[in-house]
Image 1 (cartoon, rainbow, N blue to C red):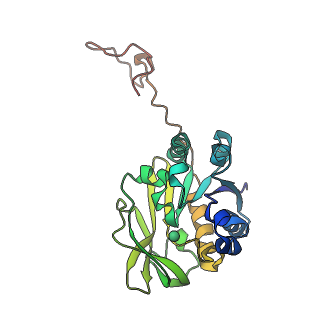
Image 2 (image 1 turned 30 degrees about the vertical axis):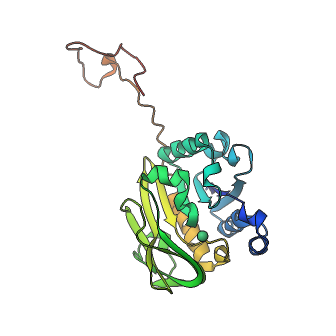
Image 3 (image 1 turned 120 degrees about the horizontal axis):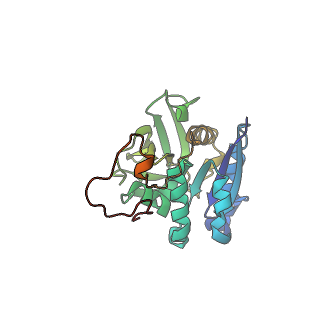
Length: 259
Ligand code: ZN
């Protein structure tokens, strides 16, 4: 069986500019996330970064991606809109998308969800407890009733997202806030999973439970099929039943139409 092709998109800014973050993630956060996924024999994870031509997301690379994993924070505005369009088109066709942590403000996430995606936050090295909302969901496979991360940034409600199709995790933080930290949506033919942990100041992506969630999520988000949405005109003589044109028509037979 062919492997699930996961592409990890890394912004790769703080790892370059901030010494203590580079020490935590010497191969970049994207490199650490890919290493964790490649522990799973069913997954083949590769990395691309913002700094590459077309941010590493060429037409060819996206066509060869089953699941795109997105980590960004400081440079959401530097992502070219043409590349955002390209990613969204692939999600609608069926490519899976996993958006991590501060990617809640990524252009691709905000446009696909259509809401502000804002939240409350605090950087104080607090304990995070992630409660499993649906133990039967494939993304939660192998986890207990909850798991904890010793130090994380706090994200709190209200979280400006459309009501999720499925709620997988709810987080509690040491300071008292709660947050919908794992949620899924479907857009077109593509599956989307948002997963909250992963502040760059902490070694979150080395955590065994976090790595398990990401492996599960890649397996869950892989395409079930591809839908190339072209909005074709079906001529009268190609209708499933024999019909004739009645009345006036705006469009010429076989015309491409307005898009
Ligand atoms: Zn953060």
